[in-house]
Image (cartoon, rainbow, N blue to C red):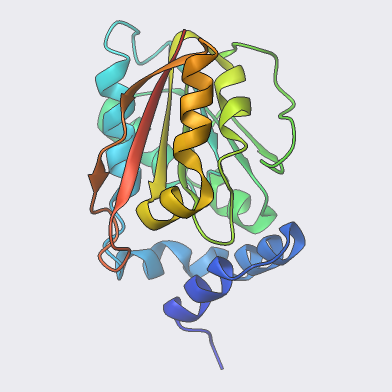
Length: 210
């Protein structure tokens, strides 16, 4: 019997390991986009709009963007189709998701990567890093934020969605405060918005690297 959208959603939120998450997303890859339509998942568009808002002086044809946890490519599509960004690299733990993302034709490079580990990227190579739908139950805690900041250029931005309840229970505020006190970032935004109809609200966190 085929899994329902809510079955996959609840299972990935409950995942206990990287391997479990990879397996679930490989299984979900082909139906993920259509399934998320049923949840009115607007976070990819919100993240793309956030990048465009905070990179006004960088031509979209030249800006280099890393989509960390790119999944099936929804954020890449929004960046490309709505704002004409052309240089977008994607990382994801699931090869199945990367295979779907590759078919969009909007990514320069796509690679498998575990976002809980150091990224195989030099310091300061991207104008922006986006991370959509990854800071939630069964996925990532706040620890990777510092690594996302590392690969952004000075003056560049990190734009990420964080489930609001997860923000509170997982210590995101403390990690953001530490990065701020260390002089690495300034907080441009962390307001709560509705980007999935049954999510109870989530934050769009925006950090500018100093």
